[in-house]
Image (cartoon, rainbow, N blue to C red; front, side):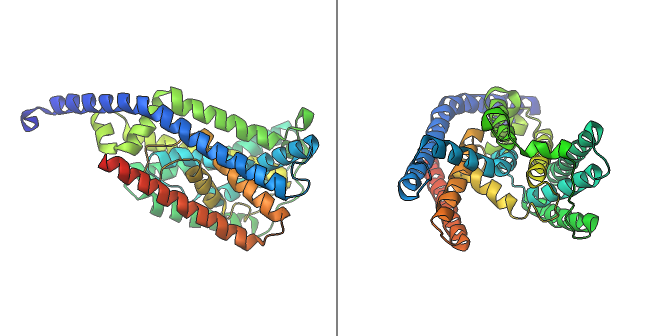
Length: 349
């Protein structure tokens, strides 16, 4: 019967089916997302309690507790910023392997501007450079993936290699030091000891979750990640959504470059190496499905907190850093296997 329908009729039928599916998903996504966030939040809380009991001065007084919490949030602030953008990308069933080296490229190009002079105008120009570089590369990734049909893994891997080489060429493999104080204060603290990088990260999480939960663009992302063909037939601008998603991820890379450079008070072409893996791990641990169509930014925040708390506790227990990487990798594999098991059960049901 459907074969006798005109294209407009098929589109209308598809629209009705997708709208019904979206209605069901809205009723189901909220409790499922809630339980995912609650689960990883409880896991972080239990992990924190274990280290508080096992590690001296970890949280044995109100002052130590406050210092440890803010230290953990500060240490994972860059990862959180990158992971917010990565969560959007993974929800669309994509991946971005280039965020680490693009962050380094944005950092060194910003450093090239900042070392030329001090003052508000130079700082604005430097920050604008970092944001422009990150956003431009992200948009380029999106265009190649959406219109060039290049697989996200291949496209962003190529961008990873290119950005790494450009960062080394620009700096001649040297670290740029001597950044002005009018910029490096961004790596300091607010009043009452709240780190500025942590404030940036928390603001990004808050804004990112609002967009996912309460805007049309957020609903489009879930539709594209769940079934891009059905989303296209229902009128969702799939290609534009992909370009904007990767552009947003690139913008968050630029913000992360600003924060990391201010914290380190220097710009290095190797600062971002490995950060893409941390961002992916935080998103997956936070409940974002690698198959797309599911995830929350708040869950990603708790995923980043779990990783950093684990590292902080194991470091104070004098566990070798290499074994820490092995443990985190094992946890990540377990989470992926659990996600696959859950998806298979949903498909059977």
